[in-house]
Image (cartoon, rainbow, N blue to C red; front, side, top):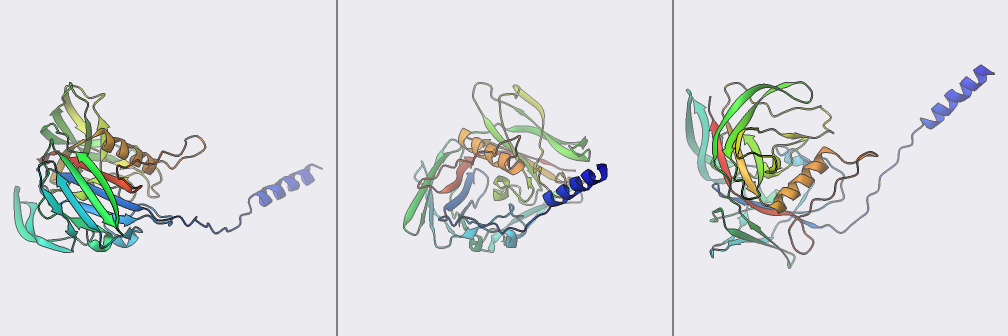
Length: 327
């Protein structure tokens, strides 16, 4: 009797474990316009990306593998940025080869540079990018963006808050990560204005084009986000060493990892100002990136952008303070 009961139990487990391949059919919804845009007070050009939403299930693309990008580029859009000082700039479709600019590197222990054509296959109009021709961002001013696609107009405005100047930045390590791996990470030092509410974005990157705006600084890339955002609620009057790390997705199939800083590597650290609107947007975006919801934790809310006519995405303006950490 016991043997029959055991066999019946095993049979039930086998039946319960059977699976059936099912094709997931996504609803064919009307594609929405998606606009990702920023302007800073670093050297331009500044980029605006215009795409259409798709019904495809896909991971966030690697920025270095444009073939992974499933967004549908919008070509032929009219894109205009203007400010509160009367300057207006009609953006042009971004191309692979841009005018020469300086590329920076370390040589014999010193910062050096050479001038070369700026080439970037990941910021072309084939991927929906448009670039400014003369606009220069200045902190304390308001910027407006208009995008026209198929005779439909989308607008957004963004104020550029001031940012505290970084006093210094240093590398410290080894520091243990969530997986107990050890890394070298930057720390920044600055005075935090206590009489006002501030929001910040922190990131580190190589020094190759350090004086120029970096559109990758506002994007979620693959399984990691190369920045994080904070408010000033817990920051003291003097920030005596704030770590600059990256947000890692809990769904990374390769496990946790940081963007390695190698011994002797030159690093740029950036502290960027955000409005409450931009801070909330990126907080929600990184929450979506870190967790897609489960029985114990609900699905994160959708990131709310600032464009009219139901376009998705965000236009924001940021002032950037930076330091170079040279070996």
